[in-house]
Length: 257
Ligand SMILES: NC(=O)c1ccc[n+]([C@@H]2O[C@H](COP(=O)([O-])OP(=O)(O)OC[C@H]3O[C@@H](n4cnc5c(N)ncnc54)[C@H](O)[C@@H]3O)[C@@H](O)[C@H]2O)c1
Image (cartoon, rainbow, N blue to C red; front, side, top):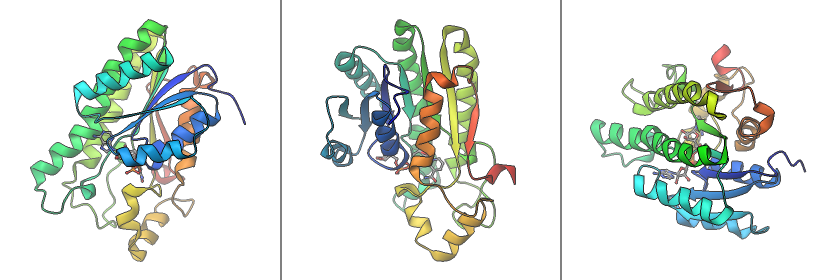
C-alpha cells in the first residue's frame, strides 16, 4: 500500500457507485481521510460495510442544491479539520432519466447535476482551500468533453445534453485552473472513455452496442472504475504539483484515434 495522500482530506461526490466509489477506495488505500457524498443513501452506506477506521465519513446530499453543497463542505471541515481535495464524480446521462422526460427536462437535469453541480462544489470548496493554503480539484469530464458521440452509437441523436455538460465541465476546469494557479489550487479534469459502471449498464447489456463501444477504444476494451480512480489519485496528489487546467484523457486511445 502506498501513502501518497497520507496528510490529505478529500470530498468525493457520486461516491455511492462506479468511479466515485472506486476513488473512495483508492483514496483510503493511499491514506486520505474521505467524506463520501451522494444522493443515493443506500449506496453510500454500503461503503461503510467494509468499515476500516474513522477515516471515512458519509453525508447524503445533492450537488445540484447549493444548501446541500455547503452542508457537505462544512461537515467535512467539522469532521476532519480541513479540505485539501475535491473529486466531482456525481453525474448522470439522459439515459438515467425516465423515458417520458422531454428534451427540456433532459437538458435541465443533466446540466443541473453535471455542470452546475460541479460548479457549486468547486465554488464552495475553493473558499475552504484558500484557508488551508491550497488544494486540488479533480472534475469528471469525459471523452465527450473533447469529441462528439460517434454516429455508430445508437444512444445519441445529436440532442443529448451529455456532451454539452461535459464540455462545460472542461471549460470550467480550464478557467478555474488558470485563475487559481497563483493560489496553489490546482483544477484538472479526467476525461475517461467508456467505463463499466451503472451509467453504462443499460447500453452494454445489448451485445452489439457493447462490441461497438469496446471497438471505439484502440485498446479494444472498456475501462474498469479503478483504472480511472488511479489517475484521479495521481492528479489529486502532490505528485501532480505542476498539472493544472488540464484535460487528462484515460481512454485507451479513444480520442487519439
Ligand atoms: N461510466 C462511463 O463510461 C463514464 C465515462 C466518462 C465520464 N464519466 C463520468 O464519471 C462520473 C461518474 O460516473 P459513473 O460512471 O461512476 O456513474 P455511476 O452512475 O456509477 O455513479 C454516479 C453517481 O452519481 C450520483 N449522483 C447522481 N446525481 C447526483 C446528485 N445530484 N448529487 C450527488 N450525487 C449524484 C449517483 O447516485 C451515482 O452514485 C460522471 O460524472 C460521469 O459522467 C463516466
